[in-house]
Length: 429
Image (cartoon, rainbow, N blue to C red; front, side):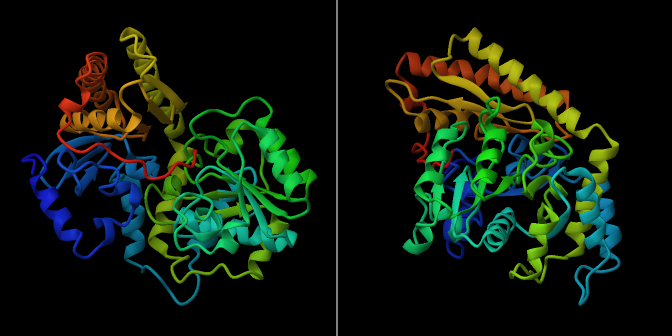
C-alpha cells in the first residue's frame, strides 16, 4: 500500500464491499487507475485543482471527463444554484427555467428549434435515436464514436454483455473520415437505417467534405443525421462543433459542459422531428430539476458574456505547442503524438516493438500522478486553466517524458513500474 494514497486505497477496499468496481463510472474506477500508484477518491475541487482524500493536490486535466468548461466551484454557477435552492429543487409542475434554458440553447445552437432535457448524455443519445426511429419508421442505426451505456449503442461494442442479440443486430458502426464505410451500410441495409449518429470530432478533425458528405448520404437515404455533441457542445464553440465546422445536423445531443458538471443533458433539433417527443416516451421525474437548469443557464450566459471558448482554445493550444516541441526535442515521434482539438486534446502513446501502449501509459500515469497532475493523457481544458497551472503541467512533462523515452530506449520500463500495467476497457474510436 502506498503511503501517498493510503486513505484512497483504504476507501477503495471499503467501497468494493458495497459498489461493483467501487465507482459509478468505469473510467473513474480502478480499471483506469492502477492500484498502488493512483488516488481513488477526490474530496474537493476549486478552479482547475482537485485534492484527493489523502490531501494531495493535482492540476485536473481530466475535468470530470470533460464536464467542466468553467472549472470546479465556479462562483457564477454556484450563485445561480444557491439562489434557486432557496425556492426549491423539484416541483409537481414545470418551472420556468425549463423554457428559459431551452430558449437560451436554441439561441446558441444552429440546429436547435426545440429542446428536451435528460440527466446524462446517454439519456439524450437514446432519446435522439428513439425519436429518429419514430420519425422514419425504421429500426437500424449507423454509429461512429461513443454514445453512452444504453442497449441500442453499447450492444455494438465489446461491452455488450446483457444486451439481447436482436438489439445488437440493429446497430452498425462506420469509420470516421471514411464515407465509403457509411455508403456500405446504406447499401447493406437499404431503406432500413433510421439515423446516422456520430461525434462530429474526436481524436482527429474531419477531412474536408466528410461531415458534409455524411449529411448528404443520410438525407439521400432518408435517415436523420444526429451529432453527438455531449463533449464538443459548448466547448468547441458556443454553438458546438456544428457551428465550428459549419454543418448543421437534424438533431444534436448535449451534456457534460452544458451546465459545468451539473447533471443535465439535452436533445435539440428540427421542430418537425422534435415534435414527436410528444408521442414517444421520453420522460424523467428529474428532467426539470431546477438546480441543474439554473447551472445550465448560468453556464451558457457566461459563455456568451466572457471569453470562455477563446480562453480554453488558446490555453489548450499552448499545451499542444509545448508537447509537439517536446516530442520533437526528444526525437520521440515513434512513441508520442498529439491529437484532438485545442480545447480537448490528447497525448497519444503508441505501441513500440518492446512495450505496448498500456504498459507505457501506466508508467506515464504513475509519474504524472506523483507530480500532482491528474491525467490519463487527455487535456480537457477549462476556463480555469491559467498559465500558472500550465507551468505545473509543463514542469511534470519536462521530467516524465524524458524518463519514459529513456526507459523505452534502454529496456527498463517494466522495472520502473510499481504496479500491474493497465488493461484496455474497450475501444470505440
